Length: 114
Length: 114
Image (cartoon, rainbow over all chains, first blue to last red):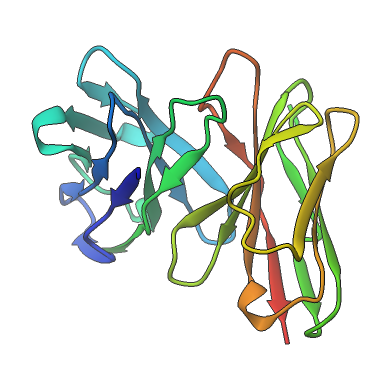
């Protein structure tokens, strides 16, 4: 069965530091991969997605992610974190069936210190 | 333009009562999804609608949960005889034809069963 693992429950970084959030997936075929962000009291916002092609994808708010098939990973990165990036981040894989439903990881909560 | 809206934003109910949660998708979006986010958990898929049909109900946790969609638009998630374990944030998402996986999420309904 498809699954997504986010091994880090909580990460704390200083403002201006670089960030990498880990995501590993289990999927039988080429996955559709996503990162969403959920700010306190907000719905989920799509940061970026990977369907095919270039394995390094750029998203909004200065985020990027790299698909590595050999490692079954899709890690999210940002070179310099801003205090406003404090939120919960979810990695997801899309099922390539007729439902298109998303399978989410359990999330990583990012805390940013000034 | 208007995003996905959900009502109520918060609902407190007594154990054993029935509740209805409403989702208004983005106009023109034919696909609609319900997810549940429990404390400390990721997002769990509940049900998927394409138009008024629900080809995938595999995530509904029990027969106390049901959902319908009318006019290809508004959807209602009903939980009968609520239990404390039903306490969670219920999120709705919609997507447009030909934009599979571009799911836009509403702010959610926080359900508390006392």
